[in-house]
Image (cartoon, rainbow, N blue to C red; front, side, top):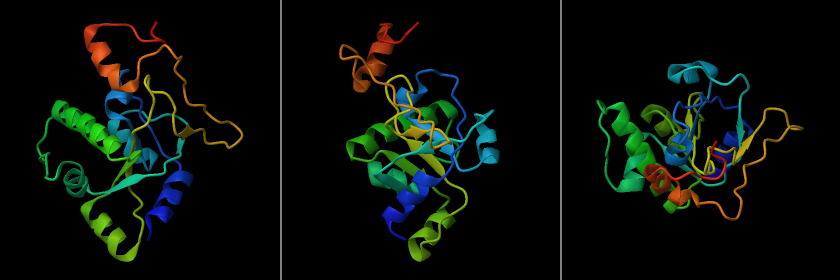
Length: 179
C-alpha cells in the first residue's frame, strides 16, 4: 500500500483524543490520537466526539523504525519513565517537523511489517499530529460532522512563533490568549 492510500485512510478515519492536563502539551509534543475509544481510555477520559484530521506527510513505523528515521538510532527503552517519554516526544516532534513531516503514525512491529509487505492496514494505530498551533489549537483537526468545521486558531501578527513558545513559557512571559 502506498503512503497516499495510508494518508487517505488517516484523513477519513475518526480518531479519539484525551486532552492533556498540561495546557502547553500541544506546543511541546503535538496532539496524540488513538484509533479507538477503548485505546484512548488508557490515557484518561477521551472527548465525547471523535476527531478528524488532515495530514499530508506522514512518518510511519513502529517505535524502533520511527526513532531510527529521526535520530539514526534507538533512543528509548522499554522501562522509560513518563517524564523521559514526554521529553523524547518533544524531541521527536521537533525532528519530524524539521524533516518535513506533519504527523507520526505509530504501529506495532508486527502490524508495521505486515503493512510494508502486504499493504494491510492495522486496526490499532496511534497518531501524533505535529502542527497543532501555539496554544493547542485545532490545526489540522475537523469535527465529526462535515458541516461543522473546527477552524485552526490563528495568532495575531504580534504573537510569538510556535518555536519560541516553550522558551517564553519558561521565562514566565504571557502569550496572546493567556488569561
